[in-house]
Image 1 (cartoon, rainbow, N blue to C red):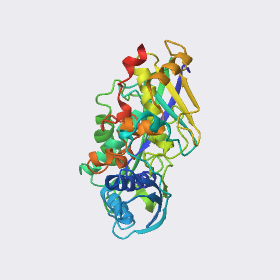
Image 2 (image 1 turned 90 degrees about the vertical axis):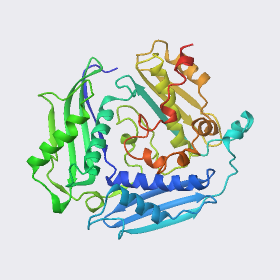
Image 3 (image 1 turned 60 degrees about the vertical axis):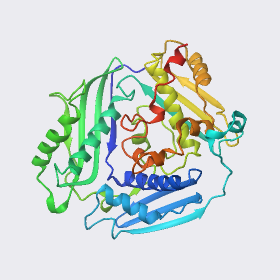
Image 4 (image 1 turned 120 degrees about the vertical axis):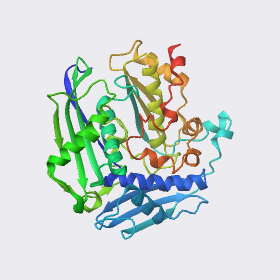
Length: 394
């Protein structure tokens, strides 16, 4: 692995236009699955000043008011200003039917029936884990998410009422001998409501006191005197959101996964029901990689699953420990294949992916659409369990 280097990752708040699109797409998925767990749904969104476009294809017995679902997300995110709001933005839809496949409840299927359900798309999906944080995530994206969540929290709690929903964070971490050593840089970009905007000096002081310091309170590595701190370095951002820049579903894949510290799947994760292997396969790969690291078999691990249309099992399973493994990578791959089932129907069954939207108030998949779809310690995600670590040691 590399020895001495600096690496940055970024995160965005719920009000960033790309994340707004992800949340709307996943809110639609949630609504279909709550009514019809066997639904097939593919939803994509694009947003710009005053206009939201939603393209959804589905096969389901459910009835979903997609424009209303979109407006609810926009309202809950906090867009109430004149430039863009849930009440008067234009919502355009393009809706079409998908062919219905006879998917039964995977919990009731025998192994031969699980084997008979193939992947219906081609995909290379990646899962990664490392021992830089308690969540077994790379430190830069972990910290960037913490800052973004804190930036949103101070707005929602009215501690800083002048903040608008759109925000972005970036954390640069300096590594020595392959390990996090110090915080090299911090960047916060916060939008403000036009009518409440404050001076750059007050914004900097407020964000450092109420966002940066609390976010690092329980972190072993904190900003030091040499850390470069940038608050809105490109100037004041007024209103922000779709009034300032457009958004698109799936454009923040690095934020959804590992902050580009490792490889990530190329396909969007949001807006897809559990039959889409490019989404659920990424969760299964993360589950395997995290258990390898939790087992103490490597300090960093990447799992690659390659799927072909019409086959239920990955055509290739590769494990890379970047020279940190206690055993060879081929042995790690064999243990992963022994203790994890990567068939699409088995993943759906193992993670209970059809029923989760009904078990989480406000929906399940929408919660994944901001602050990362992996490495989340706040949702009890099934792919974040380290339940196979003991088995992998054998």
